[in-house]
Every structure is written in structure tokens, then in C-alpha cells.
Image 1 (cartoon, rainbow, N blue to C red):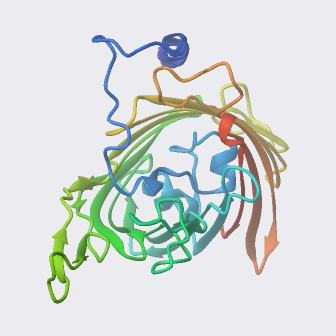
Image 2 (image 1 turned 180 degrees about the horizontal axis):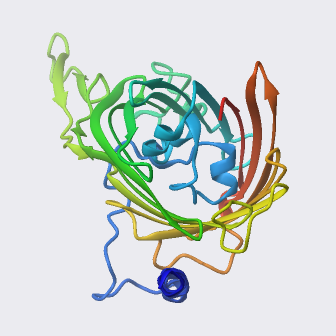
Length: 370
């Protein structure tokens, strides 16, 4: 009976993967009445959807089930309930090739509290320097407002997770996010809910996470509330300052849902193909669906040697209906090493992610205590 159930789960996952790939094929055409609307670009704080962590990026983002320690705060906070001690993470991503100046940084810490664990996470996104333009100087070099500016996104989240049973864990938390430039910004507040369940069936585990529920914000600041000086006309003695309020509207956070199916293929005592103390292989299939995207499936596989050396690969299918799926975009590779440190363990992980026309992302991260 257990074997039949496992086969059904794996068969269903395979059908979903190949169906998504088949639907992705096509040519660039003018959108028709039957085409779906994905609402891309209609939400604020989209930097919250940028993946954090060297291990997670190398696996194509397929870590809803298997993310561990402080890194789990960015994927599925319910996983921190499995933490046995204090753990921390620090991740740096250089985006879209060297020289772009675009970076994404994440940091987090987990502390066991009571029957569960408390986690605090921070992230910072920076666009690099952008030349400032104005109505009077649309190509830059305005003598009144010279120089450059930078878009930044900063967020902080607090989560608490605990084990409900020996197989089920759950977590909840809240998030503050801010984005903007030096003269206009907006703030958001949102909630997260997540869970993880170990089936005990041939190493299969399931997990789900809903992030950024609720909050909306509106842009404010001197870039929105401005004064324009009216020049002198028809002999008027002087010009006057006219207040201008730009017509902005509330935008919501990018609410998203993750679903993951993990299989311990080899190494664990419950693994599908047997146990081993030297080698281990895990594979995970994930589905990511946000309020401003189409469904994005991803798959990742990890090989581990003696619990200390890791090789990883993954693939993420991006969401645009007419995107060119024949390119190498979305493939990822990487590895990591784990070693003793201060009586605990330290991990160093690296990922290289192909981004098609946008070149590549490179990620390096350090994890302590995982």
C-alpha cells in the first residue's frame, strides 16, 4: 500500500513538471483574448522574491522542504523548529554579471526558545548608482540636481516555529519592508505562515509556505510632494511656488505560495534506495506561485559525501508565458563544504545561476550551526 502511494506521488509530480514544460513552449505572438494575465509589475517590494543563500540558489530554489537553520527563514520558517542550537547565516549575491552594481544580501539568526525556535532575518537589496534625471535634463547632468541616486530595499522579519508532533512543524511571523530612493519611499507590513510534514514513507517530506500576506503601501516623500516654481509672465514681479501632489496609489506586497516535495533517494535510513553512512542523495520538486506571477516549478538535486562535501544542481522555469524556454536561463550549479568550528559546524556554499540575457548571478554564503 505504501509503495502504491509513493508511486502515485512521484507520478503526479512528474506529470506536473512535464505538463508545465509543454505549456511553456510556443513562439512570440501578439497577446490574444485567451492569454492569461499574470499581473507582473503590479506589486511593491518585489525584491522580497529574490532568492537568498548559496545552497538554495544552487538547487534552483527547490528548498521549501530541505532548507535548514537560519537559511530556512527566507524559504520555510517552519524548518527552524528542527534546530538543535543557535544558528546564523550570511549570504551575498552579485546579480546580472560583474560590474552591474546590483547586489542582494541576507542575514539571519535562530535561537531555540521553549518548545520551538525564534528566528530574526534581515535582507538588503541595492541597485547600484543610477544617474539622476529630471524634467529639465531627461538625459542627466541637471545643474540644479546633479549626481546619482540608488534604489534600495530593506526588510526585517521575526518568526517563531515549533514541532506540533514528531513529524509536523509549523511557524508564523511578521515582516516589515521598505523600498525607495532618496526622495521617495514606501513601507509595508505582512504576515507569513508555513508548515512541514515528514511522511515516514521512503524518505518523502512535504512543506508549504505562504509569505507576505496582507500589507499595502503608498509612495511618499519629496519626489511625490513637490513644488514647481512658476516663471514670471506679463510683467509679474516674481514667480510663485505651486504645490504638486503626484497621484500615487496603494500597492500590495508580493504575496506568494510555495509547495515542496522532497525525497531522500539514498543515504537516510528511510531513503527510497537504501541507507549509507558515506553517500547521500536528495531531490526536491517545488512549485512557486505569487500574486504577480504565473506558476514557477523548480527542481534540485544534491549529492553529499560523508556529510561534509556537497555537489548541487537545479533548474527553475520562469513564469512568462511567451518566454524563450530554449535558453539556458534558470539552470544553476554549485557546491559547499562543511567543517567543525567552535564546537559546532560551519558551512561555506557557492552558487552560479544562469540568467539568460541578464547574464548570471553568483552567490556565496556562510552558515554556522546548521
